[in-house]
Length: 83
Image 1 (cartoon, helix red, strand yellow):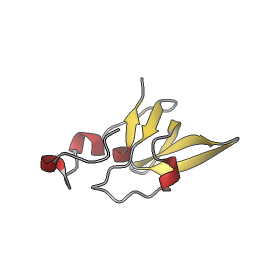
Image 2 (cartoon, one colour):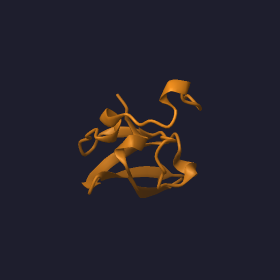
Image 3 (cartoon, helix red, strand yellow):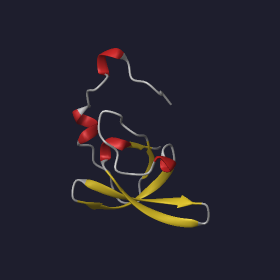
């Protein structure tokens, strides 16, 4: 994973990533976008989970933390689709 953005893209957000759509049951990874304030703990950075449902403009992502499954509400700009 890239820790820094390139100089031209620093501070800018991609509109296609901001408005991307996911379906229920899709696998995603959590990758923090530094241009937008993240509303989730840094401990789930880089983890993968499953989309449960959509809530407003964000998605409910189920992530397994040790032996317990937790649900986080994450904006789609911080999510990447896994194949």
